[in-house]
Image: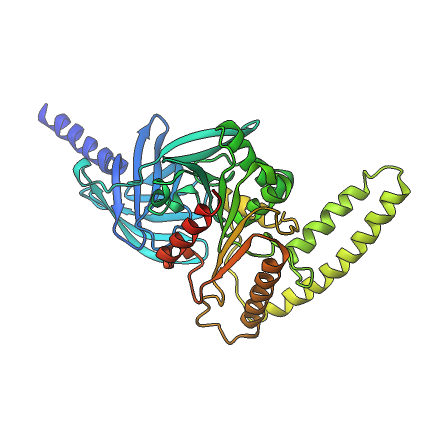
Length: 424
């Protein structure tokens, strides 16, 4: 008679174990494009994880991210990235060896994905680049990730594009260590750097430039060459026009866009909207100076006219264009704040190299009116930039990728070396 209670106890234990599901702790890898890895840990409150993209064809974010909560109900598993918009929904197999489901990410179609649990000896190398990682405080409560490849000679500092991190230069930055001490900075809001409160002042173009200067001061980096990709061009121009004596030169890597250099004949919605918003704020606090107030009103009236035309141009370009859902991740929202807070910059009075994709890689939209206008604006902006500043060289590479140091690595490396050699 005593056997029955024992059997009941074992049965209940087995049912409870099945209801709780397999222990998810460990490393899970998905051999997809790009490859993905999540390292799952168990704590008193449940599961959390660290997430990585590896083997990327393009160095887009999120290369790495945290996952604060992994929800498990029976065999069903759900998690979302903390900073960027990325979500997994799936199930763990009965043997606890696979997680099969769907990966969803902003701007990309959902895709089926299977994570396999792997042992220590089978884990992929997540970061093979030979850099050290440090964190520098640039503002109260805000720390930036700084990568340091070491090297000999004058300093070279890379600045990543929007949604990217300093790690986007892994595999390329180390090519310069024979002649330079090489660094890269991950801007606020991305990767391992702090996401500052999501207000305009924290992501203003000049605030981002001040972050770069703060890193240079903290690490005693004297007279570096700054090399920026994409939105990094905004930081190059902010530093170069305000603190030219702090730097030896600027290298724009597919970064010569309206937020980096303003062509007066070119309208840009973000630039025009940001100027109007700032001026309207100033009108509330300008004080009693009639001269200042009159000048500010005139500038604002002109800016409003430009904004009105920019709105018309943007509306015309939206015809039959569908956009995905609004971005929700913290890094995505930080990117939106950066995009909303550019400033108009002229060319800096320092030696400059700009390497740009002109004409752009545009297939399959090369013949659309909108793309033709974009390409014409690119060309006109580059021509004006080249004429606007002494000691400026613009290298145009037809049909190069926006990640120009990836698609045309040898040429970009050679041009950068030649430019920096000429500074000594």
